[in-house]
Length: 309
Image (tube, rainbow, N blue to C red; front, side):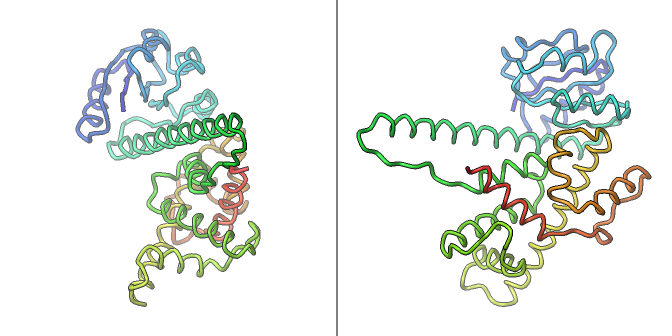
């Protein structure tokens, strides 16, 4: 990936560049000390994938710069700042930034955020490639004399899109969830009995996914161990996603991702509880959280199926 860093603090620019290059995350191809030096033409010329930009700068701040870029910049934007004003952060998200990272910078947080942004870029490219392929098939069938080709269903792709939207694609449990979607889709095709609202028992889903992953030669002990590990990964991933979605809602109740995903995927009582914890700076505890895994999987499957039509 190609990065451009905008911050009036040379130390911050150097720190970000060092993290990106030391971790092999990509290449920093340009820097600027103020937003007034940045425009869509410059970013396009340098083929920038990710713009890292400070919120407060002397001439043109980050929000003004992002607003000026509008939809002319197709890459992703990560905003960084010492300011934690909910109104300003909410405005930044409404303008289309992907993440807001608070200063002082935490190396591990920066790495994690960039990994998630990279996954979203890959996901978007995959979707674009699929759309181009389907368009090509459509042109072929419309021009052919009697062709009857149909687009191939891919519930994993639509599931990846949903998980990416919720900031979950980088979590270890995301792969388990995608395997579960694939199993449910195959189960429905084979039996014709599956309704999005009537899933098989959750333990059966985990068991079948574990069996497919380990193979028929796996022992009962190995299967049991993998099922428990998978359950923990999924539970942890859902917990992290709940925290991410709720943090967006605390910043801005009208944030589109909060409005679209919070009530669909999570119980209202857990949303409210998590909001109070974040407001009061209570250390989050997975052991005390009530994670409704079955509801999450059910909604994820329903939404993934809907995207296919």
